Image 1 (cartoon, helix red, strand yellow):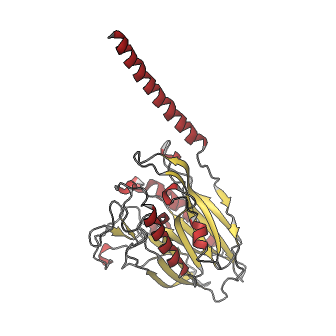
Image 2 (cartoon, one colour; image 1 turned 30 degrees about the vertical axis):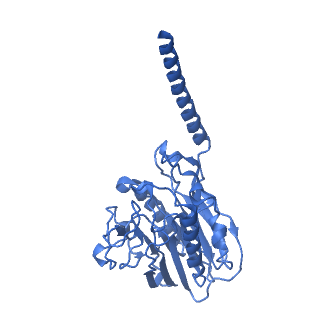
Image 3 (cartoon, helix red, strand yellow; image 1 turned 90 degrees about the horizontal axis):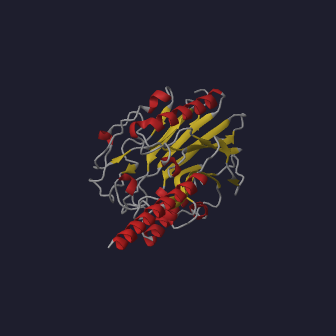
Amino acid sequence: MKSLRNVITWTFGLVIVSVVVIAGSFFLFSILNEYKPAAVEQVALEDVTSINISSSGKFSLVTWNIGYGGLGKEMDFFYDGGKRVRPDKQYFELTMTAIADILGKFDSLDFILLQEVDKRANRSYYLDEIDYIKARLPLYCSSFTTNYNCRFVPVPVTQPMGSVTSGLATFSKDMPAVVTRNGFDRHFPWPDRLFYMKRCFMVSRYPLPDGHQLVVINIHNSAFDTGGVLRKREMELIQQFMVAEYMSGNFLVAGGDWNANPPGFDPLHIVTDDPVKKDDFTDLQTFFPGWEFVYDPEYPTNRDVGEAYRQGVTPVTIIDFFLVSPNIKVLEVKTLPTGFEHSDHQPVYLKIALHPSG
């Protein structure tokens, strides 16, 4: 009896030691492989064409968070209270094909800004989505920068997200002079930061005939940010950058997923009969007095992913929009309704004109 008790005790102790060793080894592996980008990094470009920037001073853009092709209307997501990380492969392939086909129809636009684009991530079946999309946009220059790079995300425990490489992609008809990744200086505290995104904004510079630049900024700010602590700091850094560029005479347009409601957002203006949620984050206009946040007030751009989308039941909101400097005139803005069929976000279209006297 005593011998059996000793065996059980020894076995239990061995299991505990093994668990500690495995967990310790995993954390050491994660620490050694933590993604640590520099504050500013130059982004590689693929030049497919050499079309000069429009001499008319008018430009068209679209922004769309494509949800890595894994957040179509039938999906829920564990970070938002759902259970799943990725759909089955067949559904993913159908969704990603539909996204690429829609983007291919945007081929008359000057700029296409995308967020949550994966490059060989486990959640998207290791598809290089940049190459997949480029096949639909053969006449565009493309650039990609990483904001999520983790060798292994261990949650949820029953179906770990696994390896992730994902980020921002900008497609343009003209070749930018330079593209940079501008990183934020605050992230989730350790050890969470080992497995979360390292947010940034991507800056593409296009020389203008007058010697100044059109600066196009691709945005994807923090989510899951209680109290808006990270978003506030992100807005401070975006403000510092954009105001300095404007003061030097450049023209600026920033678009993407801000994970915050635009100034003046009113849930009563949404016409889709969905329940609408409103974020209590600090009014973004306080960061940019005299600048214009541009959005379509009638249509939501984002839906909750705690469950599959059900029109009239699933909460929606507006968090995808544009910001333009005072020397830019807005000609048109509209959300392009997709019924959240292929992503938990809907694309937003913008047409602008440069207005030097602004």
